[in-house]
Length: 452
Picture 1 (tube, helix red, strand yellow):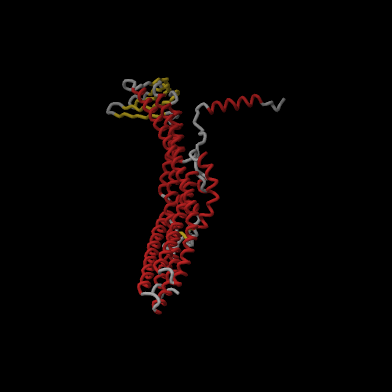
Picture 2: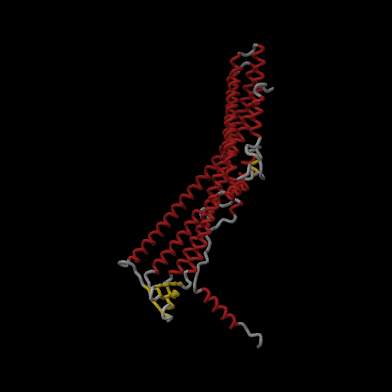
């Protein structure tokens, strides 16, 4: 029987635990649906929109680079008291040593790197969401645990009140269990506040409230255990290949290589054709000329040669950074995997410890009635069991969060199906159209005529 002074207080905090902290104005998200929760966070986060805007700018840079192959128009006009002229120039590059092609391909690789940057930001936000989710489910589970403990302690308190009233036990023993109840009530309030803070943070991330406060960490942890066994092969064989950070760095390296080609092309002259038209406003005479020109600028002291070496050194630096990132990634993934295995084994040990502590607690309760155990020993046995149960909840929440983070790094979440990977990029080749046209004409000549 629960003490009358305790019941209203427990009812208030229990209602605050079961009620949603944020008013439900939209379709709520089930807290146990991890994919939906993370996907909602990604879809509404400003950093993702910023990364997408950067990718859009990179895509437009490809268009800009391609248009630099077109003729360059220049219009100039001078007006004076006695005369005035208007000139129109149209310059078309014919051969740049591969500079324009390299600039286009550099823009293509930069666009690919920007796409991988979106995936990288998504993974970062997903892990942040998981950290908050772990705090939330742990707080919910703690409230469930404290609610059960408070109910059990209240039953013991009622029993002790009867014993004190009958003169079987001392008043200090009643004060002792009352103090334990107050301690658990304080812990319950702390877990409730922790849940509210995490719920508010999830609301900021997703823009929608979350539902399903009946968290069963044991069931959730049991559901992922078969997947932990299957994840080891992916971890040690193909984990780093399609990681967004490595994909981004790979395309950045390729873009830097194209920049080296563009800079190397400046060591050669540029051949162009130019049409120049001039019109005199006073005499109404005009003159048009078509010219073939050559432009060569190696820089002061042939500095373009040194600039090329600078860009080559930058490419090497990017390669070394990619190798360092890959090593760090492999080390991190292996550490995460070992931590998951450790949490899984720790969960098994804690379950056994809880079973033993429960047997001890029940035994001490019976021995107390028989006069062979003190009341303090009984309460300490109950507290030890509660501590094991709390450690189990913490371990299970860490196991769940660690597993899903590892899945994110391996690209195995459902919302990661559209992630960009390292694939062969279709580079720009100005001679491709001519080759395709010649191939088509050759195929037409080879085909038998219908009139024969």
